[in-house]
Length: 114
Length: 114
Image (cartoon, rainbow over all chains, first blue to last red; front, side, top):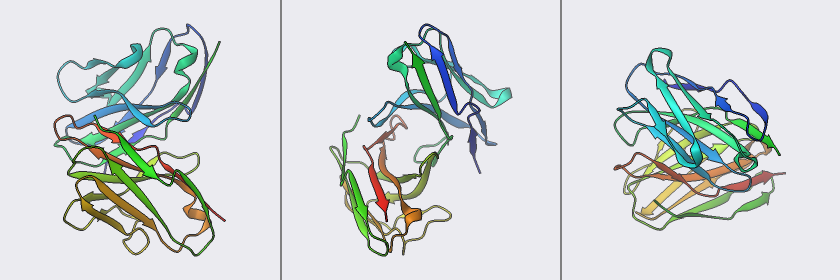
């Protein structure tokens, strides 16, 4: 069975600080990896995804994530956060092949202080 | 992409009653998913609903408690039966497009059972 661990449950940063949210997964096969974001009062939406190819993927709003296969990690980064990045961030893993179950991490609440 | 709506957006129900949640998608999709997000926890997949066949339930979830209908390619319902306070949660539906493997989420239904 696949699982996802997000190590940071609640992160507080000042504006312009750099962000890195940790995500590790457990699964023996080929995976698709995702970061989803949920802004206050809004739907879950996809931030970025990795299926194959370049392990450094870029998403919306200046976010990027790096897939390190040897470490089973997919950490999310942003060089300079803004107040509008305040949200909950979920890492998710899916075994490759489509229509496979997506397993979510427990989420990290990011609070950016102006 | 997809636009997904859910009804009701929230409800407060009494113990022992049932609630049916509707999920409407603005395009035809093969697979729809129902998730639960309990307070302070991550999303947990309840079941996968494929049009024209019985839903597939995850471990810990049973059809008698969470019956699902999928009458066509744009609509699904999830019923939470014989509710108890432990069923208080946000229930979300999502769809996946095979071309992108991305899942799009509805706004959720916030259920409180008293």
